[in-house]
Image (cartoon, rainbow, N blue to C red; front, side, top):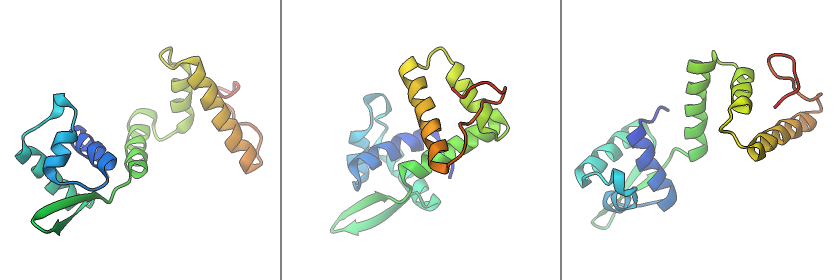
Length: 136
């Protein structure tokens, strides 16, 4: 499921709150994105139509609850990035991430450990980068 940048902001607030009214979600947004109540409500209605949130009446309040998990949203966003920027291939994405100077050594080392751990779990030899060198 594709989320716009604004929908990500609303969903992020809702994931933190777990269940909330439109006003509570609005108040949980970062100050730079504290849109009008009607704007937030419109986005929530759109997210409900997409199946990302549910809405339920609780007394006089309308509570929104996330149906889309953060992990599922991340998976979809990563899939989109993978297809658009890396022709659907993981090796160039991982190589790019490992070579990016903004990626701290600590995070490169963590990435390397994760890949090695996954390979051990599967019982395979350590994976190689696209160019045949050792994995990041």
